[in-house]
Image 1 (cartoon, helix red, strand yellow):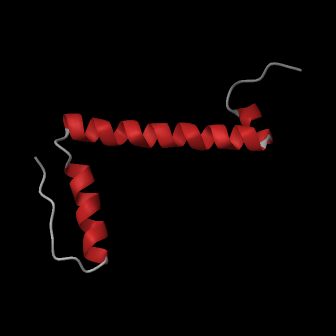
Image 2: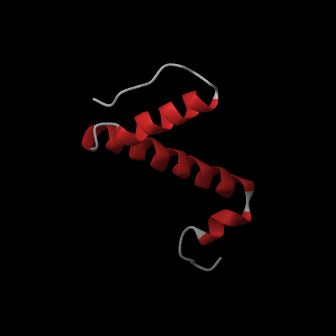
Length: 64
């Protein structure tokens, strides 16, 4: 087996694809936590308000 730079061998199997999905999930979770910690949750509140308004909701979430 020859050595190859990561993540290229990961795309060859279902386990590799699941691992890449897991890493994407972790990156998304870390990005949300960084938004809450450093940006006073402005991106999260905009996403929640956009999702709620698409369903026709009357409530609105305000950032900290």
